[in-house]
Image (cartoon, rainbow, N blue to C red; front, side, top):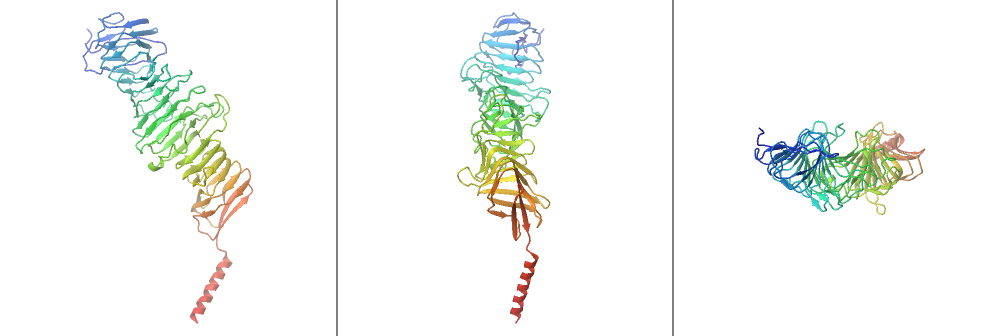
Length: 530
């Protein structure tokens, strides 16, 4: 005889994910019943015994869907109330439609490859949703705000594959307001995918549909499909948010929300790493909104994507990251391409577009694969760029916003290193160049284009007198000069321009001049003695 603790139902649906509802009320509140029909379309209603393992279904029972079904099964719920609904270790597919599924119970998707889909008009079960490895698809057909049950959607830990919650409404005004907790904490570059919050794939973009409830990241997460995420992601430690890019023009995932790390935790943004720039086209990982994230560092890192690298779109770049400096943080472009605008269609060759402004924020562009790309790049308003990566543009301006002089800093290398400028470089009167010296060598800025000198060269570290140090190389024309050289004590500071390079030498006081000075002092002393 079955214990009076849970009922089982099994239903399969082609191309849908598996769910499991965990009991939300006290154990033993209802009977356990198992769905035992292998295929077909059926009604789930109170007082019916068809398709159940025993007895009639009664509201308050526990429903279990096991791996019994062999074909596509759809179930129309005629307004039922559950104590729990579970899909443990099932590889069959299930889909539900019809009336409300209510009650105090929870939905749990166990360790399974199954897919469970819902298109019910309303779902008001109160116990929350627990998703492990499988896929949940929620495809409401009505407009407006939706909730998938009344509780939190929790994405739990799975040993070999993160679960997916896919929200794909048919109306452009739809949104999902459930709060979500991600517990699975796989590292960046893990061969096993992160848990995913996803939307539509390869179909017409529904730009208004999105997730609006809060998301708590106890682990790392991937945002994918054609959805807008306009909510707050709260970090409980340093976390990774992976932004999918879709597979066609306009199919990018858009993050339009806030990241709250309490000013302490850092967030890494990563992407899918399509072959850039000739294949990825306009489909870049996209940030939107005003930014102002309360985190320490924002790190763009597409590590693990092989030779491919993701492009990241950042709007309002003059202000988007302006809160980081107060937290002692910076923007770190480790691997990937940071841009403000893209104009290329899918499959087309990417061209430079837009303007990227670095203002009141510090950027570190790392060597090899870190890059900022735009038609023009402006570094001003105490903004700074350091590191050994690349700035790619038609022109890079430092110390000006395009019209007014305003302090901006270039600090090549991380320690001693080379910053690459694939553009004409214009150093305005308010530009600051922060160069490190170690006695033997110094930082270098390699310019693939014209070079206009200006501003202040600030020297730190050990400088050997009379040694020649190369500050710049350039491939085009050169003009201008520095207004001042600070940080080094030497009677003469010589800048030499020519041969496609700019060099610096600190010259000591000439020996003959030193002897003359000593003789003058001696004469003065003798006069005083008389």
